[in-house]
Length: 239
Image (cartoon, rainbow, N blue to C red; front, side, top):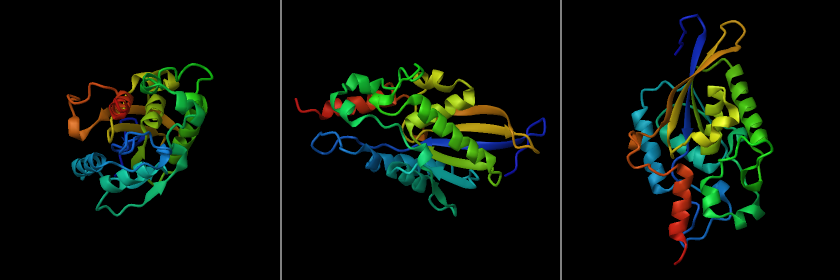
């Protein structure tokens, strides 16, 4: 679907999704050893299915996901019934903390682990550098924009990665990472205008932010998404 801005720029649209609900604790209330391989919960699958039905008329002509199973599964459910390939791109995988640091991490530190993202040299739970991950994600996104054979992209990633992409769209970088929340299976709508001849980015427009089909007014989401994870882990700890 070709879109043209008032000034003649080519306008393309990105639907930026966070994966559906997952659980980082097992049935015994123990934190999972490898958070990169957790699947969606039943609720996460229902979220993705609801979202796919609500966006059934959106003319997606490209789909890119992080290579983690939860992103792949979310994309498959949202795009179910469409004739579209799902491309896995590891550049969009979530921040990874240091394994040793995770063993001493308090639940409060987990709940606010993006709070100091803009501090020079800051790392996520002693692991990935915020600056380095931001550079990796922005580079991958700009490479997608350099490919001109798509108009409406479904990009399924993670809460932290989405914060970076929204920061890129706002032009604020890491400064706004602590101020952006991403509920499970939410989507953001970002339009990107490019020059019709050179392909250079002319402007970026955030049209929708953190929209969750299952709870549009956020009545059921008073906690931040990371606070919800920390709360779930707290409840799982034996009294």
